[in-house]
Length: 71
Image (cartoon, rainbow, N blue to C red; front, side):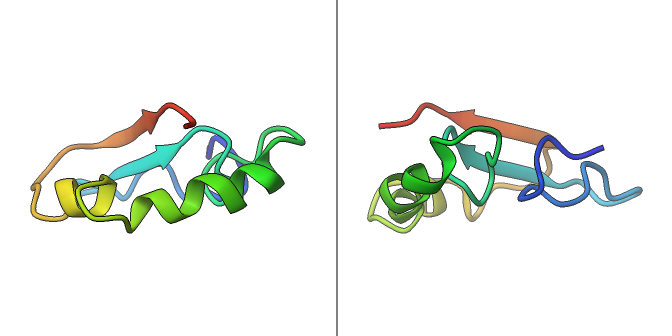
């Protein structure tokens, strides 16, 4: 079962998958009314230099969801 409509499947049998999500980002955390404006505020953080994608892209393994606090 997924956390919210934006997270997709929770498990991929035989394949380690680790998601990195920011609280109130509507793509990953569509659980409240704060999620829509949260998407506009939080989602760009994934792509900023030194932020989530840059610091996690080369990591291997892991499973589940890593939650980052909303800014």
